[in-house]
Amino acid sequence: MTSVAEVARQVAACIEAKEPLVGAWHFYDAARLAAEARRLDGLTERGPLHGMPIAIKDVIDTVDMPTGYGSALYEGFRPPKDASCVALLRAAGALIVGKTVSTEFAFKGPGKTRHPFDPARTPGGSSSGSAAAVAAGMVPVALGTQTSGSTIRPAAFCGIAGYKPSFGLIDRTGIKVLCDSLDTIGFFGRAVGDIAMVAGVLSGRPSLAEQAAPAAPRLAVFRTPVWHLAEPDAAQVFEDSLGKLARAGAVLEEIDDPGDFMALFSAHETIMSWEVPRALAFERLAGSHALQAVTREGIAPVAGLTAEAYDAACAVAGAQAVRWARVLDGFDALLTLPARGEAPVGLASTGDPIFNRGWTQLTLPCVTVPAGTGASGLPLGLQLVGALGSDPRVLAAARVVESVLSA
Image (tube, rainbow, N blue to C red; front, side):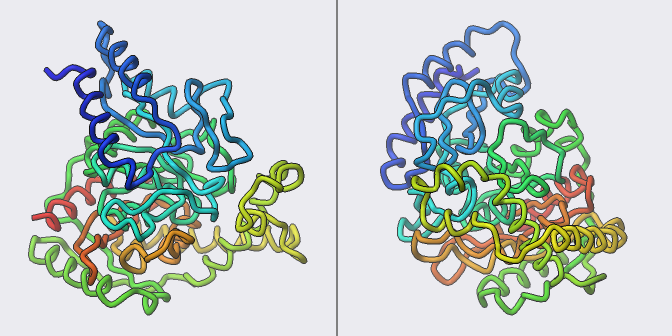
């Protein structure tokens, strides 16, 4: 059996070769990685993730590595303890490789990371480094977060699997809060099975990885009201994917909006506009001098926004969630787009989360898998969405979709 030390050497060699171009890491120390690998090799009891290299997004606390939250304000900060997800990964025997680049506070201010297949393009965000590190082959799995589209969109851009669990499935203690009612731990991996296994360990739900894949998954097809914003090649890959799945035996059913999907965008904007300035009150009031301009602007309170408007937005989101729950309960998953198209050129923005925000606001489990390539030869994905709490079911369906589309 391959030693963890040998795995660490392979990881280090890949990072050494590719990091100068990609810039995925906020903190990485080859000597620390080798020492941790030797420690794991010396253990007599081995956990379910023994020796698996995993990267951690820089908004997630680590006791033995700096956590900068993507911001110059916290450069060099050493948290007093691990986030709960990191502590659980260590207990399961995972090899924590380092901290990956995040946008500032997992919000709008981009970091240094470039797309691993085209350095002139963004890898997406806010979990930029996590997506790029997996896509570049540096690690098989990485943790990220999602508040709008920060896991699903970069996974689609980078041609890998991404998973945003149902809200609350993975404990968030020890992550930098951006928007408390939406923030969710996310996962990136080379395959759905890998991220399902890691998520199963962290959630204490082995069924995430063990639920049997349906022979003929029942899949809803939903073209959101903003479908016209999809790039033509993304829309074509979506249609081609439907054809492949139908020929493979999947049962596809076109569905209509059971409520007012556009209302979710407005609710999401209002909820974030109310919660973000409060979550980042210290940074806004005492540390704004060290923040990127786009962050300062983004975390400023919105003039005229009231608590009553926030409460009304929460009520709208809740009502839409009830309507979607009735529809999704009858399917293994819903199929839709994860992004407008290929990763956009330039590093000033991480892309548009328009195909993610509604599902995040509904707090539903989402998975993206690679589905093809666009006009520039870069990856395009397919997004699966499940009913709240149906994570084992949607992950099982995603394994089937992944297998069909990769054949």
